[in-house]
Amino acid sequence: MAEFFRFRSINALLGEYQELEKQTIYFASPEQLNDPMEGFRDIVWSGDEIVWTNFFKHYVFCLHRNYLLFIKYRDSIKLDSGNIPILEGWNEFPTPLEESLFDDIWHNFLNLPRMREVIVAMGNAKLKIRYNQIACYLRVIHSLLLTEIPKSYIKHGLISKMPQLPEELPVKMLIKGILAWVKLAEKASSEEELDQAFFFSDMIDNNQRLIQQYNSQMICTGILGENNQLVSFDFPKIYIGQLERLLWPEWYTACFMKSYHNSSVWGNYGDNHKGACLIFETVKTGELNNLELNRKTGSGSITIPFYEVRYADRPGEIDFFRTICRLPVAALRKLWYTDQDGNISECAAHIGSDGDESAWRKNYWDNFFRDITIKTKDWAYEQEYRLILSDSLGEFSEANNRELTYNFNSLKGIIFGIKISDEDRLKIIDVVQRKCRENNRTDFKFFQAHYSSENGDIRKSPIQLPFAKHGDR
Image (tube, rainbow, N blue to C red; front, side):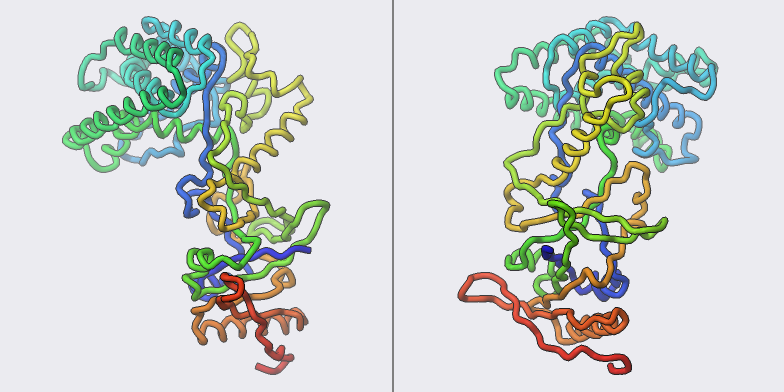
């Protein structure tokens, strides 16, 4: 059996969250962790004409659905990223009229001057397109769709007139610009040169968007203004961010360390040495160290393995078109890997034959856990291990449901920080001794942290306490 260390503040243990009393371990979302690069993946888009066609069709579908909500509800509901139907598709419309409406929008988009040429060029180029590049392409396409989608709405009687646009768009010139970008990407001498060119374009666009946002405030404010902002200006960036939901489920983590010796770890996670460090003992299954936890919702326990965090110079590349996995296989093949004539994309080769996707699924989950346990070398001093919850079904989307409870027998001891107050130390001892009586335990260990001049790091010394018996304090 192995030991893992979890550093906690006094507020977490005794105050607001009562983690010691409740025996809870909270699983945080990547956004709640202290590394802004947490969960970052270097996503690249590289594929043939089939997947690029379906990529743009997916964008048109998602924008259409949000635009429709905007004209229907205006300011009666607030639109946000959750309204983008990333995991849905155009294969199942509730009514024939809705299907006809989308088909009309898609047909008009494809028949914009040279738009098919753009898609063919991107499929033939075999480029690795990154975030800044895809954002440039979608910004242009977005501006064109803001004109094309209302035309279909008028045709189908949803609106009576075109919305006011800032200016008439030079359609041919804008699409010609995309083709020029594709050629620029093909001729670039390095990925760094290419990224720099598109980064510069992104900066210019951000400035233009800021001006547009400022001007739009003069027209509408409040929820109406925010909804207009999302649909008219912010949608391309929000869409790209939401695309990750096609690749992997939401995930949450609880962080542990393999060592308690590092003073910086105590400073960062142990409440500036005023907190404590919990010592957990694992259960071994094969080569894995595990901790058994109880769900807050549902019934039964789950055994979760510890994953070692690896420290690298940069995250690995993620091939978008070959990593999509959140859809049923039949829908995935139809929506992303098949064209209107039934031809199959080369990007579908990794899935395998119908009914035999086991190797693909195993490789997917191996890569999933690999990619969310990589941090930059700046964090190597932590010697971190993680418990991870993957959440394909949304069971843990609510923060309260991510407070899982551990068996008290898994908690082997507590190390008090160098600066912990006597009052907090006694409160912790009281809680633990009461739990020891309830669980008939006499083997719990308390330690006091101190600086070791011999080792040049933090060490622990045992605290000898008599374990109170039933009826005693």
